[in-house]
Image 1 (cartoon, helix red, strand yellow):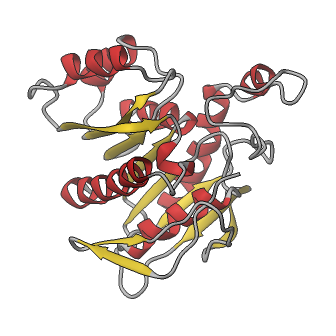
Image 2 (cartoon, rainbow, N blue to C red):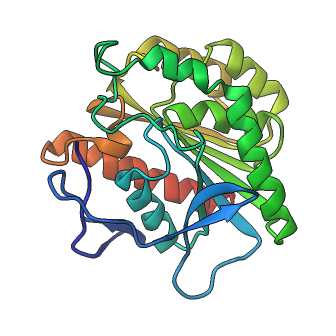
Length: 265
């Protein structure tokens, strides 16, 4: 299992970023709290931060307890955001020994059965409960951060106008071009996609189709896509930080995400 560790925050063009290594495990600095009966990992900014804005961190299949996801949430909080990481899978996240590309035998872990247990409509209902409860607490504006599986939920929330900004990395379970054509018509949330070179879930052909639909000013709220050479699916969460290309991709995607949030949230 690959995970990140810290020597303290690093300032990169005013974006606070953790110096990360792949071979050391540490815990996140946030807390766990029940919101609308959904367990959530919560990371809060130091000092003053707007109580009316929040980030919904929609995880990959490894879930809200996976240390890499918690450390990423901490880093977004260090940049001034209230971050809520809901348990999307009702304590049934994919074990961390399953590789990001799901290249594992059915006997070791049945990925297809897991996917069937967690259809998007069920996960969307879980997130909707959290959003309703947070609105009752005074949150008025949400951004969705979606990684892998979470990117499916992120674009659905944006299309339903439940969120104001959408940032996704190495998305999975998208139907291209259908989902993007729907996004173009139904969503008002600016969209950033952090993509990579090797990604069976979101290959180059799909990336180019999304650009053709949303790029060139066609999606008026705003559309951007980063592309990270030498990276593969999962790089933004659990890439090999000893690889310079992967490290550049992980840190570059994080920086691009923070800058996009600052621009639009």
